[in-house]
Length: 448
Ligand code: UD1
Ligand code: CA
Image 1 (cartoon, rainbow, N blue to C red):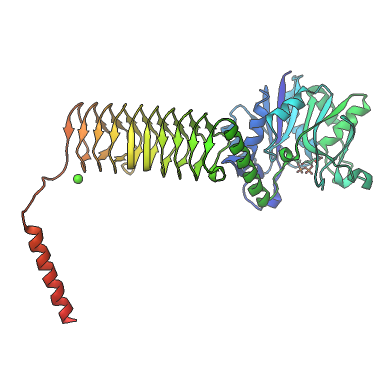
Image 2 (cartoon, helix red, strand yellow):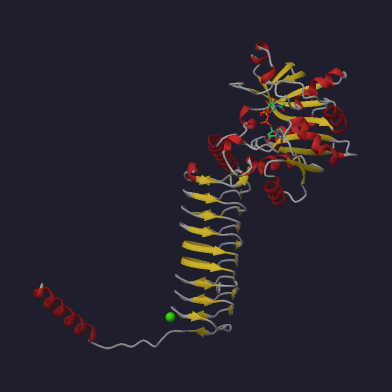
């Protein structure tokens, strides 16, 4: 069945005490709303709508990066979850599939859970959970899986408050029915809000069915404070580490490896302690990442080895069997198969051909203070230690640069380029100089 997602993200998140809208605070280096959208994407929705309110411009900008096809609607005043959904429904005019409502501040709902929800054929289906401490959650009044109504904490009797089955907020409903039910909502309740949750009783009053699908409480965790954000980060990291292990990744000390939402690591990759993955990292099977590496926006191919203490920045592409050693930084550079960059090097805006060796202390001088320029090095070249490659510059296949050279002109294939003063050697002069210096030191000490 065709699916449309509505993600509610208009709330201010007062308790975050922040200028940033709540749904843009990050877990796993991605805004909270990106997590909700990623889970929802698994259902292959036809339409994705995000309801924004507080900080709508910022939310819009962020969402367009996460999912360029998502549509944003503005809820100017936050008059309740039912009112929020009402703002999105005009965009679904003519759509007769199923609508799934998610919250932008609830990042842990699993795609499999949403799939179970989508499969239910009740008129309205609500994702519920057994709460350890039901607190102020809406309570599900149900007989088995048959749902009668949802009562908000503020409106609940003591008897209803004793119910432990709670509303996660995720609701599925046929689009045309949802439009009718939402149009009939009133705000005659303790909060004076249009509750989306009232659609359950309204559907039942029409003789339609409503059902509860349950999930683990951990999936429904919402974020309201900085403390909860930190706890969510810890939970997210635990989940990613466990997933990586299930996928055949070895981590020597898993608690010190930090993932981003989109980190992808293949089978039999070995990761040392204290490795941080920023957004956009993919690593193919059998690569090795040694201790203390920081990787972001990069691709590492099969058999490559990185680190310890390496930094790969956006646009770093390592082909098979590339070796990156300690204190090497690579940005926006393509390294072909078997390239070796062992130590203390910066490669930025560079293309390096197969099996080329880059000596210790090499720098691509890519920035002239105004513009960035590329360095191109061919295959099987040898870049001597401490070579400065002043871009734009090209070094041909099989060429060699002498240690300590500042290369400003292109080097043809198979040539040697050396740029440094001739060495002068004076036999015996060191001995004489030291003697003179020692005498001078002794003279000064006597004076004091
Ligand atoms: C809501 C549910 C409650 C459920 C709980 C789960 C209703 C009436 N109540 O309560 O049954 O147990 O979530 O966390 O639905 N939002 C908007 N616009 C609005 C109001 C809310 O976009 O006008 C968004 C918020 O940004 C948030 C989400 O909807 O992401 C939930 O709103 P919130 O006010 O936190 O709902 P609760 O009162 O916690
Ligand atoms: Ca020099």
